[in-house]
View (cartoon, one colour):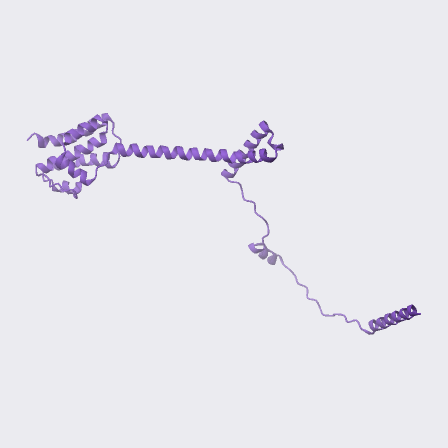
Length: 244
């Protein structure tokens, strides 16, 4: 009996719901729809805007990328031909993947070490060959040293650039002793040229100054044959003061 009551109640509720739905009226939207037209100009505007460009650009390979890829393929073919790397796994696979980078790193290290060693050796030999002289040493040489003996020693060591240097200092010393110039450490070669009164001495001194600047400061490489030619103007000028 209770079941029939529940069934009757459900039927009544269903009928009431249907009646409620029939009581509502349907409203239609009769608003006029405005059609939007997109022209080609609008499309071109968006196409030219980078913010709307969703294409992924692929960077072109440069020379280094191509060389690296070629090197990788070459190593891969080499290892596959010998060990069959394509089927390797575990530790062996790791070794063959890392080994090319280790080899490349070792080669780069050896190249850098080689160039550094060559440059350092050149710098050391260049410093020894030049035998640079500071102002205090220049003053010491002119006032106290036996310059002809220094010239002879430099020639015996085949250090012809240094011999030219000593020849020039000897000329300054002889001219200072003859009171042609007044030697001072802070003076320049142009100062000495302006101090010389006699034209022929001034011309000769200009000539040896040009040779000295070219050989010493220009680091001009002088061999034995060239030295024999370059030393003559110095000796001719120095004889002017030593034969008096």
